[in-house]
Length: 489
Image 1 (spheres, rainbow, N blue to C red):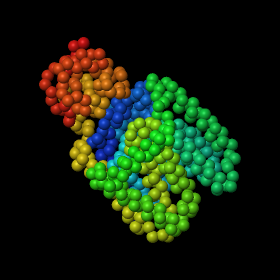
Image 2 (spheres, rainbow, N blue to C red):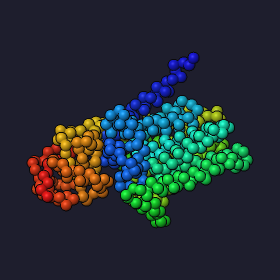
Image 3 (tube, one colour):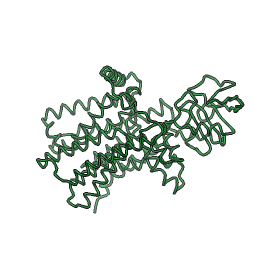
Image 4 (tube, helix red, strand yellow):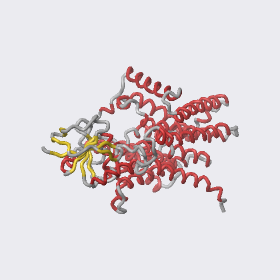
């Protein structure tokens, strides 16, 4: 019979997951914004196939909105709660699939902190598609591991079908998954060759592979063709000068953090400790002449390759540069690098090396990283830990209304109660769902939020061809400056 101590790590992991949910899920996140709200609003009234991708895009598959439907339809969850639960179920699945690569409980607990209580710069792992995408990559790793160990024809066919379907879903969720999946198959094929001294001559696998490429290509091409928006600009590549510019942006941003210029003390401490840790670990591996030995491990090789290639993709992708080399993209490299380091430390354990310093240093780093977003929210922005939904719920007292505001003060306002509150960005913003414009103007009571848009409320406002006149005095509600307007034309 197992000792209670054998389950201590599971209690820790459970505590980490629960803490993460009440900090970073859509329902409880203090910095929830209109980008997050899109998922919630789509889940509230999901329509297939027009909602197969995020509104206004032909990328960013709406898996979480789909998975939220049973909670909404069968258990009458509010959309925001359904999305939160569905998203965390996927993250939990991804965590346990990845953690199966680890042999010791220390690595599993540390990875739980990295995954569920991430560093401030990469906190979007808990809600954005890249976290979901990598959860599906984790499932693929488990399936490929199982495939390599089975001789059963039936089980092999079931596993291959599962690999095909999960690959399709991952690419639907994020086009970036194509890169990681190609890396995964390449490394698996290479290590299979090293093991058997020949490439696999299994005709079943070859057939599935060839059919799978065609099936996935045609399926993704089809779903992209049925959405109203066709925007392929994100597939454009940077030229040499733009790549240099992208590098300069990254170097400058990271330098500012490392020299404490951003005045985010925990963020800078984390970054500095991470750089020093990686330098010391690399020097240690080189000194012990273990580089070759380490990369005989299939998963170490995969995560190193994934980290390098994904980073290069971000450098050459025109879309990433156009968005200022946004840190949310680099969640992918954060995941790969974290798994790489943990697997390397586990591998070094096999050589009976004294690794207490590295384990202690790693634990300190991930704990600083875990505290950094909480500290930032509490003392920097928004200077509170109260969930955004508990702030915007104040709009409920206005009844059934339409809201117009700047993008970041529009969709977010309606996500807590989308049946009563319909919102749209003003007509100079990007409109994700044009149907909401008509719904806003069909409401008897229309309110305008001027934050991040106007310095004052004008007597008359022209929006989407409609004339609005001020109907009452401005007031504050839900951390917003609001005023009622009346449509006269």
